[in-house]
Amino acid sequence: SQQGEEDPQALSIQEGENATMNCSYKTSINNLQWYRQNSGRGLVHLILIRSNEREKHSGRLRVTLDTSKKSSSLLITASRAADTASYFCADAGGTSYGKLTFGQGTILTVHP
Amino acid sequence: GAVVSQHPSWVICKSGTSVKIECRSLDFQATTMFWYRQFPKQSLMLMATSNEGSKATYEQGVEKDKFLINHASLTLSTLTVTSAHPEDSSFYICSAFLAGDGEQYFGPGTRLTVT
Image 1 (cartoon, rainbow over the protein chains, first blue to last red):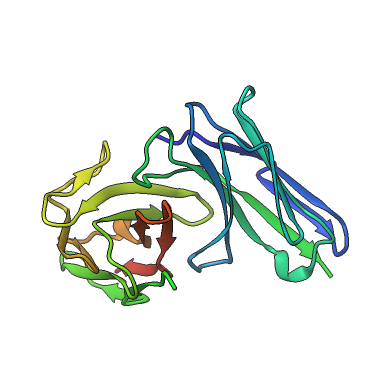
Image 2: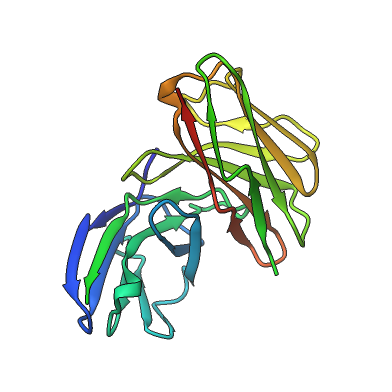
């Protein structure tokens, strides 16, 4: 069953603006991962944040994790048209063997 | 490193026929692979966990006799959609779990269209 819920479901912004996407999950987790998917393509792994971490950065990406609220957010700063894609969070629950449950995703459109 | 391939990238088949999709880990061995299905504008739904040398574990609601999974080697898992129907048309994505770093690596997906 789908655990993760993301909001917004769709986000439309102008180039240069920041984009924030949120994800909630229901069970305890070892880590939470964020992926990007361009239309009709496979997944690109963006960032993994472990349950004992609260914030993580990678280039223009910033991910936060609040285990007390069972939520995470992905911030893309200074967005570019090339960032247009669907973004998914995924968690493996308490497992260590990689079985992921994906959120419903946010469709991000960045207008040039 | 950690590249996963899928073949074919797209396939069109007639209703009632079977189609096989391959998932390969190119530069690492994976005892566990996963198969997901994604309908348009929706998220990925896990179909089954493929375990090398043993039977696959299917998620609730997934027909194991319709979606046959074989994980015969540490680098190859196959998904066969048997007696395909138009409602099986979807994007099928596999992934391979690399135990060494605890991460899952995804294939590029296979677009199946059943006419």
